[in-house]
Structure formats: structure tokens, C-alpha cells
Length: 350
Image (tube, rainbow, N blue to C red; front, side, top):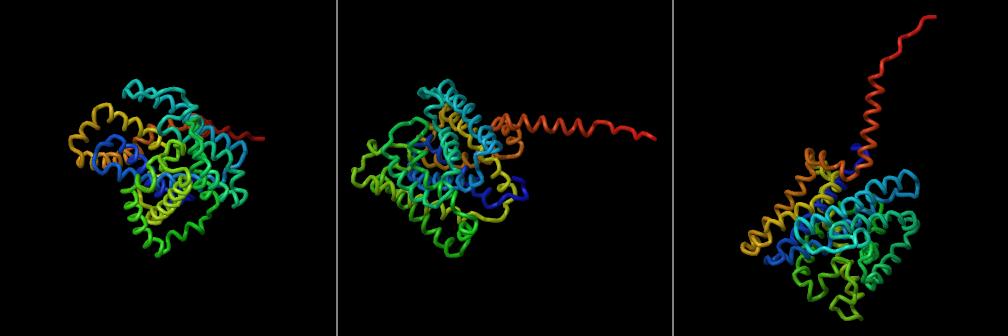
């Protein structure tokens, strides 16, 4: 998508959401810190649904044609095949975490989203054919909790499906209502209310439900209400996602908007930095200084997202996120340069 045709609001939303992804993963370093569980639950109640919704919204044009399938391989399949083992061995051999095989079949940590998004994209041409796939996806999501396998993250593929399908079916005119004054006014108390709910997550739900990757048999909620609780978590996630997105400016925000085009760089590389901080003892520091540790962790996560998306760092790292595409573009540029440098034949006289 050319810069002129990009929607600055979507780039703002993407940058805000991927920054929250970094914050959420960084908070894993300060689990013993006072307040960390509340911040974590508040973010995870709605930011993954928002991220999935935006992914669905941006997948509307996907079809089973050669160009788009090639792009799917280049931008999702190849990065997954490369970064899944890279992060696995970094965590095991550098950080000393007890991660286990198998690779690729059971995605590790942050890599789950790449394979799940790839599978959603592959069935997009079917899902976008009729709006009835939306209520059907809710039924599929509720039934998804019956799965307890980590193979290809099928529980998340099924559990988060409604947000992706909703993104496929909503049009720009629908999202324009997020700019209505009453929606923005209602967004603030909505997020405050979700913040209050997050403080009591384990009394009305269970934190595991926020991840959409845990089977019902592992959740300490009675069988007769676990489906209802899952549905409540989904509704809260949707309200929080729309509330947050309504508060994000629609106008271009300069460098921040530009950074919204580098979300894949942030997503693929932030885990290495976070795990490095674990290896050097950051969790021990936050245990000694709990409040300071939590604040510094959140600020550091924001700084990390901005650093990875900054033009100098992005230029270095972006080829690794799509190596085949980068090589093709480089060859095309060299071919254009050689063509431009080729001497023009001298005119011949009759």
C-alpha cells in the first residue's frame, strides 16, 4: 500500500496495539510486582481482540490467487519458519529457559500469532462471503475451549475467530462511527469499568480465559457457566477494543504514524530484548523495587517499541522480516539501475 493510500488512523491503531503487545510481554518480567497482575489483565482483556480485529479488517482483499498466496508465504510463513527456532534457541541456550520441543508444530511464546494469522488468511475467502459466518464464528469460539492441545495453537485459532471475522465484515463507514462524539465520551467510562473488572478477574472469570489458549478442563470454573464466562470475556474484549480505538486520533501523527508501518519488526524482535533483560536479572531488581520496577518496565517497553520502529533500526531489521521480498526488491532496483545506465544507441542516418 502506497503512503498516499494508507489510512493514518489504522497506522496509529497498529502502532498503539503493538506497543501494548510489548508491554504485555514485558510485564512477564515483573510477575511478583505489586499491581502487575492488574495491568496485565486490563491489557489482555481487550488488546488481543483489538489486534485480531484489525488483522481481519486488513485481510479483506485476500483471495486465493498467486500474488496474494506468494505474499502470504513471504510475510507470514517464512518469518514463522525462521523466527520460531531463532527465538526458541535464544530462550533455551542464552536465557536458560526450559522450553521444549517440538518446533513449528507447537508455536512458542510470541510466534503463535504468525501461524494463526496465516490460517485465518487462508480461509478468509470463505469467511467473508456472508455475514452469517460471524454468529457461526461465535459458536466456534465457545466450542474452541473444548480443545486443550497446543498444536498450531488451534484453541486460539478458534477462540479469537469472531474478532477476525468481524474485522472482515465491517466497512469503513461502520468504523467511522467510532469518531462520533458519544462513542468517544462513552469510551472513557468503558475502559475505566474494564479496569475495575481487571482488578477482580479471578472472582468473575479466570486469567487463563484472556489468553484463549487454555481448555475448559484446565479452568477452575463450573462447567455449566464456563461457556457464559467465555462469552462475557469476548464481549468485554470487543467493547474495550472499540473504546480504545475510538480514542486514537484519525489524523496523521508524524513519526508515530510512520512507525505504524513497522509493526512486524517490533513484533518479531521485541521478544529477544525482553528475554535478554530476564537473563541479566531484571526480575530480581523488580522484586527489590516493586513499584519502580513496574513503572520502569512499562516505560522501557514503550521505548523498545519506538526504538525498533525508528527508521535507522527498521532499515537494518526489516530485511529479516521478509528476506525473500527484500531480495526481490533489491534485484529489481539493480535491474532498473543497470537499465538507466545503459548508453542510448546513437541515431543512424539513412
